[in-house]
Amino acid sequence: MEKVNNTTIKKELSHEEFERMLHFFKEDLHNNTDPDALSRCLENYTRELTPAQAIHILYLKEVNTLETKTSDQVITLKIDHEKSLIKECLHNKKPQLINDIRRDPIYNERIDNVFSYELKNLLLMPLYDINHNIFALLWAGIPKGDINQFITQDIEHLQKLTAELSYVSPRENKENKENKEELTINKTTRIEPPALIKKIKSIFSKSKN
Image (tube, rainbow, N blue to C red; front, side):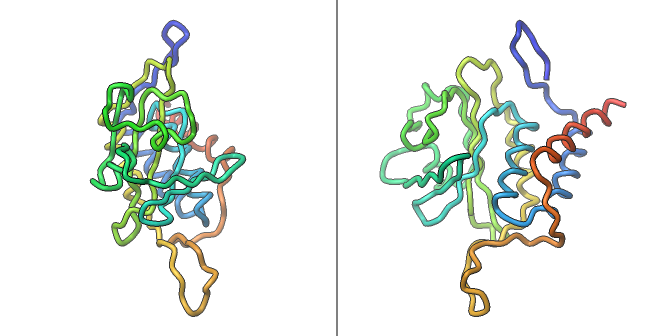
């Protein structure tokens, strides 16, 4: 990050910095054992890779229903017949990058900004399970008054990052009907946010030495 006139400007990552971060992301994926931990992991890495300040994971519960958790509530979002960027992202199965939502005719405040965030720029990234079906959307926003913008490199980095996911969509089976969701992982140790943030910061300090 660099400050110009008291404004923090997000610097582009070098190839070496990104590859180092991707390596640590792969490691952390194998240390996360549940969807909540996966969400925290994705949120922290997305915040370091892009200028986004608000990040959420919206899980696809039904064909037209998404669900996400905030610090104090669970939000259910139903995608109806109205136009919206989220609907477009789910339909086309491609990332959406908008660097001025006011000028986008598809943007729908009620659906695309269910968090009532002071939103200026928005990036939506579909997340795929091991069968290449969308199981969630990554929602990343830049607030009003922030001069940073999303660039195509942000999409490229996030696509490489999320390609490492090995998510198994919710399913029921005879052995365990209460099984709601799982990740294909080998370890059980969870890395909590403070340790994760500390680890991410160490990536950049090492790359400068």
